[in-house]
Length: 272
Ligand code: SIN
Ligand code: MN
Figure 1 (cartoon, rainbow, N blue to C red):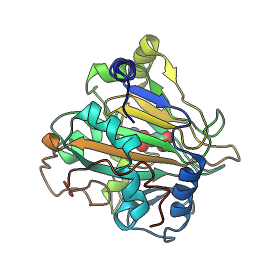
Figure 2 (tube, rainbow, N blue to C red):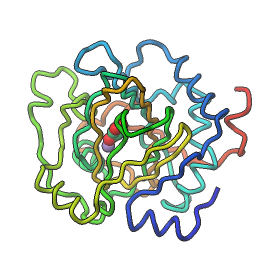
Figure 3 (cartoon, protein in one colour):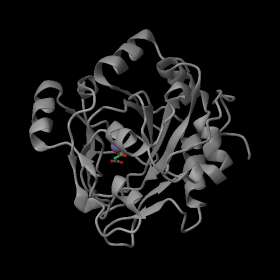
Figure 4 (cartoon, rainbow, N blue to C red):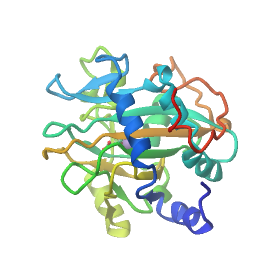
């Protein structure tokens, strides 16, 4: 599926593009079933503060043919190649669970702050794709995004050292509710005055493309509805990170630079 010139322009102007009802019900069921088949514990799993609820899982595509097929689905990869060029690889794959009643906050941030600081990524080129695995409504913690904020480039951020102190595994500070690099209130006020907050809602299977410098967040989910969001980040092969020290774990930042090519349209409908 190719984006129209208008859609590309909208992505460039707003830093995001929302496509409601994008995958079919059957395709969504395939993804939900694959998620339910994951082992109870995976290396890239992070818990909420209660230590009982799974907050997110990272890198679970590595052992999943279904998720690998999703990454190369033409509905995703064709638009990605229009936005990023033909030579793209997978940078990150994660599923944020935002569980009913307990799914916690994501403070305001730009993703590129993490990729620049932690991974040594040269440019803010990656495109995020969020796939709704549940209906997202006004109650279950939809993503909040500030339209046009990507045009500011990387904004000065607060580093929350407390997020890492006393932790054995520091990668957790980049994905926990106590996030390491956050935007302060004055910055958010200024950005919102200009662009306003957009909170895309829609049925499972809806898809959101967004820029790596777009300011975003989400509030805790105190509703009875889970809000599982599958996030795939694509990067250009010309923008491979050059970490200063040890690279972050493979489940968080992929070092598999295989170029991705669109598969068949029905790839999620085939038996694997
Ligand atoms: C993210 O910033 O990774 C997503 C936040 C969310 O799932 O609400
Ligand atoms: Mn983010």
